[in-house]
Image (cartoon, rainbow, N blue to C red; front, side, top):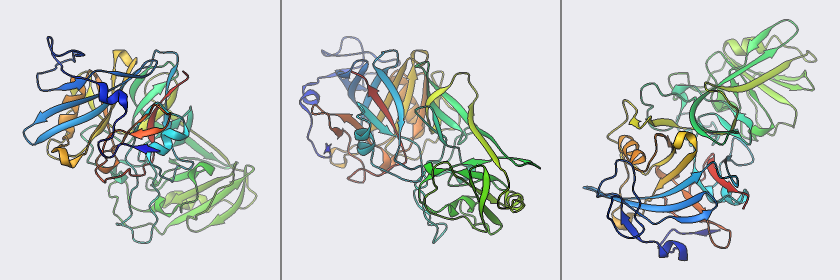
Length: 414
């Protein structure tokens, strides 16, 4: 793996010229919607058919905003976008590793995730994402309750169900994915409230599959729907289903690998009381699917929260906290996708953005809709170098890549 954590650049990146984003600028200049004479970007470098890379800079009184941008033509037949993820939902990996495993042309980090468990000493942090995950058309996990999320406070009207999705129609969209499912026995049917989630709704039952991984499922019963730091529930139950029948029962959530085809049900409060009525050998059928508000099946989806809709910043965006940001933007009725990450090189007097400033920036870069992804030390921008190896283009604020729950990757058949 090659990283550009200092001032090393590929020959293509060195060759670009900077131009002001207004008419009559320098050679290589392009024009952006609502641009002004302070926002500049380099001439685009073609990475693959339908995929270009540029850098941009924007001076602010507190420092220079320096960012990296992938522009993806989703109508290009060679191009596809997918959610990149580790081997398990409850796991983390650097973006460069995730990109290298799929030979991605480029990638940025994705959703916020369960990064620590200081509020629950002795409980393992799962590393799993906050929102829904769909990869290659497969539902990997559902959204945790709003009060259980990690990351900045949600703006009014936003929810952990919000996603950036790419459909099989090769269009990007902002959508919401809710989990629909049931646990059915010969005598009863109960709603399924979770799928491979680090936190379950109060009173709910959640399903865990082999995709969850080895990490303890104890975190699922900690906190409440409104308070992530609340204690861990003791009114719990766990039931293992194999071959459509109850194989094992336990009073507490367990740990370790779940064998392929098996499902572990975890319940808290009323959900636990329902699971305790099940007996070894009893038939149980489990169904689940993520359902969007908009028509059309999604090939991939990643969680975050909207900052720009129809060219206007969302209401109630934070205008105080400044940090490095990662964002995905949409233009041309879903045919164009922008993947953007800021650069955190401290020696160059670079600064981050507030969420409100991020919305303005994405609009100026050409987006009509945009989503805030995980930022700060997670912000990572990767492209494939001339030798085909993943290269970190930005300078993560930790001085190195932070392992993350997932990433948005651009793939090319060329």
